[in-house]
Structures are given as C-alpha cells and as structure tokens.
Image 1 (tube, rainbow, N blue to C red):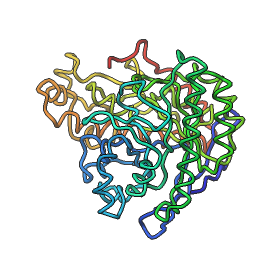
Image 2 (cartoon, rainbow, N blue to C red):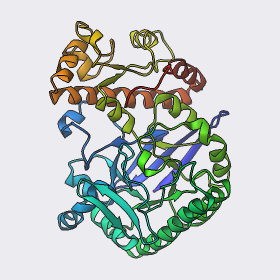
Image 3 (cartoon, rainbow, N blue to C red):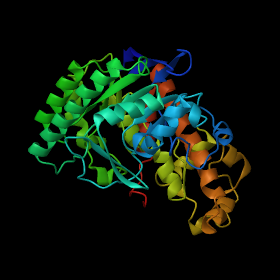
Length: 405
C-alpha cells in the first residue's frame, strides 16, 4: 500500500490518498481520500445491519475495520475458505483492515505477556503469539493489518510498565515482519506498527523512533487507555503535547491511525494533531444508549439540520426520553437517511421502550449515515480552506455534560 500526502494545512490537518491493493481480488488497486473513518464492524458485520441495509447508507467508508479478537476463532474456517474475510462476510466491496482489539468494548486488563497479546471474546481469553497471529492474517487476507501490540497502559502506568509495553510491541513487530516477508499470501498486504509508551515521553519517543525504522506501511497510535477502559471517550487535550513530539519523529509520508471513541469535537482536534484514519465505534455506542446523532456539520449554510442541532445540548438526543412520546418529527429534520425519511422520534421511542430489535437497526442506519456525512464534510472543508469554520461550529455544540453510558 502507498500513502500520498497532498497537503498540510496551516493548522496541521493532513490531506492525502491511500492507494491499496486488494489481496484477494486479482491485485485490484483502490484509492481512498484521507482523512477518513473506517466502517465499524462486529464479527465482520456492521452492527444490526444486513449487507443490503448497509448499502442504503450514503457516503459509506471504503475501509471496513474488523477485529482479531472476534475473528481469531474462525481462522481454520477462513483458511479452508481461501478467499479472505471480506468475501466471507459479504463485504468484498470494502478494503479490510484488521485491528487487534475492538475499541467499542471494555476488556480485562493485565493479561498480555512477553509471549503474546491476550484477546477476548465470548469464549473468554485467548493468548495470541506472533506466529499464530501471522497464520490468522494469512487466513483473513486483509488489505492491511495492525501488528500485534501491548497497548494495555494509561496515565497511571509507571515508566517500567511503559517501557515493557514498548519492548514487547517491538519484539512482536520484528517477528511478524520476518514471517510476513516469507508469506506468499501476505505479499500485497500492508502492516501498521503500533506506537506505545503510555504517557511517558521517553518510552513514546523510543517507540516512535524504533517503529519508524522498521519496514511498516503506517502507524497505529495507542496505549493511552488501559484495556479495561477502551470505550472511554478520548480527550485530545490530554495527549496533545506528547503526540506533537511523537509525530515529529514519524515520517510524514506514512499514514497515522488512531483507535478511540471519536466524538465530533475530538475528531476536529485530532485532525489538527495530524491523524489520518479514525474508527467509527462512536455511532454504535450512541445507538447502544438509544441516542440519535443530531450535531450540525453544515458550515456553509443555515440548514434545518443546523438549526435543530443548535437547539439541543450536545451531539446527540436520547430517544428514550419521555419528551419523545408525542414528538412526530423525524429524528433529525432534513436528514436524507432511510430512518429520518420514514420514521418519527415517537415511533423509535416506542420501539426502544418495548425492546424491539428494529430500534437499534433504525438508529444504527441514522447514526452511521450522520457520522459518515460528517467526515465527508471534513474532507470538503479542508479542500476549500473552511476547516476552521467547521471546527468552530462543532465546538459550539459541545455538551454541558457527558452523555450516559
């Protein structure tokens, strides 16, 4: 894979193009613009949505993010299938990125070892060693993947623990790169190395230097939150200074990816740090608590969507709230998604209160649509030099308090 950095704005936002080759599609090449978010999945499927329903959503990302933790048990079946996890899950139209963990869920902390990384699913803990990890990737045949890492650190981790995380991650990376190089199946598959080190500058800088010296195609910035707080909303201000120092070491011509719960305000601030690729677990988490995204990103007009957003506190509304009982308006007036065009707040409120499965389906359609349109607006604002106007609009809508989990 290849990344072309086209421009860097005066505020630090990067605009570029990722050129990726599909490993299981006769070497077909596809270009996608950055900044971008990936499609969040659960066991290779968009949460609550069939493939046909997923295709109703506009501005779908070109890259589907799947997780080693949920797919590891299917390695043998995928090996026999031989056509990769994209086709196996009917997402063959997407480029596939495999990360180690699912950012949207909390998992037990403290189980990584020097032999491998602990991943968790409904069956419990599974320790994945580098050799087994590469065999998994050979079965998955993704477009690119995150190398095995020890990201189980946070601001309370001591220097010794941070250094241990860096050492383990680099050892894993060296073994994986050596095995990857020998694998015919992984010939056109990209590898992203992880930059670790918690909140310790010395550990972070060493991780950045050593990872940049390896033959990786991009970087995953992680290790700011322990595994048992994975779905905690990120605070960019908290990591800003450290990231700025790290990014001065990383080569500009390689993409930077970061997993987190990316609310809109944190996205615009992370763009100024120089992040290129985000995940999209945030719309799923909003759906899980019965919410609908309502924030405005129409920075160039006074649309109905913008007026609605300005009349609410925060980026979302709760359709579980009693005030929705007799609200017969669309979840977001003016929104073009299937849910807003066909259903009312009152109806979805009823579905939520009666625990009907249709409720999360309709909310997931809207929340994905809204979030993906937001990223389209981000790219457009950077092209037209209107990003600061969009950033101001987003920050004006910050909630007075965090939404319930």
